[in-house]
Length: 536
Image (cartoon, rainbow, N blue to C red; front, side, top):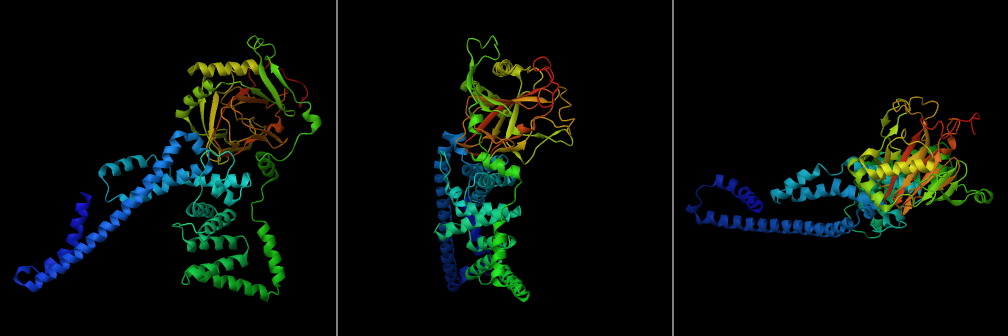
């Protein structure tokens, strides 16, 4: 029917004006011969229309075949597939941008069934915020793990199951997102990568003129005037009439002339340019540098003497009846603060039950606002979480009991079991689990005092990244499925242990599931007595 409608549109478009002007064609063969020419024009137009539709259908067919293979692979191992950050970004981009472009392509000529279905499904698609968030995650991974753009673009990441790569258009998109954030450092990196791939012969809809326009401005913003001029000249070779580039070139030449007038030698100018280029990247705080180094497995190392004091053992929970005959495996991860890991402490079956209970409730993870004491979302915590109570599942109840038996602390005043799943580039930047003295109302609504200790289950292995690091002391604890780590946030005196400041590193490749239990002060008075010394 759609094709017939188009035919009528074409026919009316050609015949109506002529018909209104000449209503008596039959009275003149000469006039009728004109209709032959009109019909010939219609046939030519019809053939052009058919070619256009066939070309359109061929594009759609190629798209469908490509997506058929991709979705077939992805649905066999969704978590593994999305564990690759490039796959996650491209999924956001496809559903937010590319499917919309396909919809526009077929809108007039596809059946109502497809359009109505598409309209219904689109409300559940990722939006611009999702696409931007995934792009920012790639940039965050690039910085944290010192990845060059070519490595990330080619998908050469450690432990990947489903290798994927970024097209020149994808690189251009990343550069544009960085540009909108006034992040000219990453704009330059990704625009250069897009340009490089096009120069290598990649066929793409990305336009070198647009890329050079963004790139030259980003370079100029970082103080490299010579490079900005060189890139602008290249742009003008491709498009001599480019208005902005011509204006920029005149401005750059004006600045260069002023520098010469001020008796600045070319050597001094080059030295200055080099100095400005060196300060491209944002100067992070010392903690940020330590945090990123620890995430890469670098940074501070424990001395051999301290290392010798770490042991592994069979632990019975201080002669807890449940574990005397069947003690659990425990090993020291760090000495100060003391961090211990329990091995084989949660089974695969329990993990799957916890995940299934949590999945329907997962929502953006929140943090305590120190000013208001209320929960809020934050850019430095990128994950989704859910809370599970012991009364709703025997498995959760059994896990709570296990934590109580092995820590010796009362879990009746603890917070519910929090289950967290980290997405693309998922992280939680350095933070304290306990409330400091300047946050007296942080846990006031709970009425159970401060967070005395943290128990953290690792419910998945992570192919690359995702460590729990302690920047103050240089400790890195790596995820291992079925294990849990435990540490005290407070000294026995009730004072906070500031060496427990920790972070969840961005997940580079893989899917990270954890669950944690925050235990509170109330109920521990006889289980962990207070001491007189503040830091004992």
